[in-house]
Image (tube, rainbow, N blue to C red; front, side, top):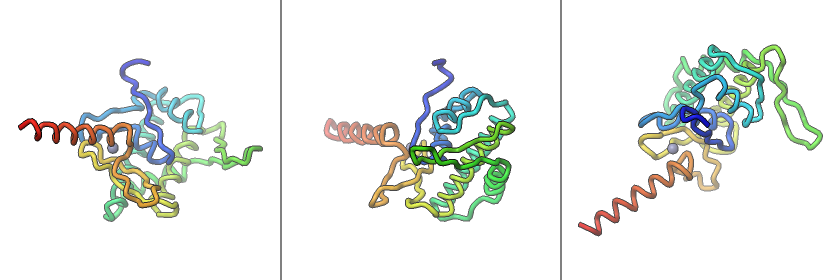
Length: 188
Ligand SMILES: [Zn+2]
């Protein structure tokens, strides 16, 4: 894989997995969908396969991503939702016609139209964001405790006390930082 295409960090919630395609927003930001092809790849692993995507569609996707990030951050901190972000989320939601279909195995799958599959995929993501921001699902929006990350994530733990967007990256880094700080203290 080329160096400019970092791996995806996939969670169980579609909307926050999508906002996670840009990480370390308050540090050295890592763009995980730098090209239209990487958006195609991300959509494929997220159950929203499309054949291709244009640069304009990638820009729409990134605008949706940052709008979800802004609205989810406001919701997590109980501030008023930014109107511009809400508008983008609603526009993307309205401009697709995805169909939920039931598979023979009893699972839900999204069927995208052949005419506008990318718009349909973005619509699915926007609707997912709406359902978590509106508080319709069992869980709580929270912000990652890493100062360089502060990603919005959806906490579905029993106690609702999850602190990191991702245990393998932010959680571990913080643990290591604390270990090093303690270690230095004992050396002093
Ligand atoms: Zn994080």
